[in-house]
Image (cartoon, rainbow, N blue to C red; front, top):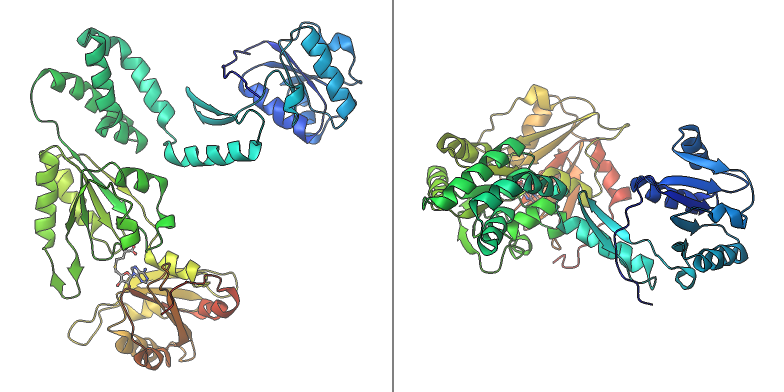
Length: 465
Ligand code: SAH
């Protein structure tokens, strides 16, 4: 069946909904979005519609449907569970050329309701011509992930600048180029990141720049790539990964995640091995600044979350000092990813009321940690970078009063298809993992919550070699 997509202005126009149940309520909600004047005809109303009537957002005619209800209607929806009645409403409406929708029955419809991606004032309507509403909903979910939530704000900003831009670029082609650049560049990204004032300033600057030949600044996206499973990336991370010209990535970034960066982007490895730095932190900071000044959009991709033991703060401090635009995108941190994929809740009403994240670097065979703060009842400890010092870590925890029987786990390559989980106690875990070939990266989790692993483990990696 073919339907022509159109957008209907229903503001203050009388619309009739026949039926007072849940399905009718859904349709009423839709009509109210369009600010229609909604009248419901039905012997009874469900609680939702009853509330809307009380709030005077709809009117209600407590009766069965009869022909005269159609008088003066701009649109009618039949949403009853009586097939015969729905058919009658449709026939009568069609005889009068009133647009009619019958829920779940495209044969009886002259209009159908699309699935909507709402980025007001931008609206995307999806229809399968009634063939498969489920497919339309799936498509919608996909579009929702691709189109930033703040697209509407971008459209609004564009509307505000239309006059100015038109004045500056009288030729249509020039104007189009200008807008294309704005929509795919820093202005749009700043807006998506909630930096509205900066976006406005950048747009003003862009208008001036285009006249001068000055090289516009690039920007840096400091993005958390999560612990390994690419499905754990945020929508924003993925979008920026696909638009950056240059990618600077760490050793911890999983290959499956790196693969999702733009195919033709230049990739630069700046990984740091344990105890040896591929390129120093200062050098990374300098490279970022230089690349941005050359006008590049640079993705600084890090494992996990950039602000959790990721030196993200240091890198953007330099950018901030140099006045280079940047944004930071959080990622799932290893503690959270490993815990979830190992079925170990970091907090739990019965076992842990707090959770503490620490790094356990071994320095001259000792560890500089606040042991008193770590050894607390009902607390989970998530230990980053702790594998090499696990003997010292466990020994010191016990020496500072932790019961030796406290449960502990090591999660290796968490969230990936190579994930392995070893469990024991603070006393036994070092010995247990000595017998295994432990590969980085690995995370140690200490606390009673680890006991839940046996019951709650759900993730089954394919390649547990
Ligand atoms: N910014 C990162 C942490 C960097 S520190 C984050 O938020 O996750 C590096 C340490 O993180 C590693 O030594 C290891 O302890 C831990 N780690 C990172 N990814 C991991 C993974 N997939 N599985 C287990 N531990 C991981």
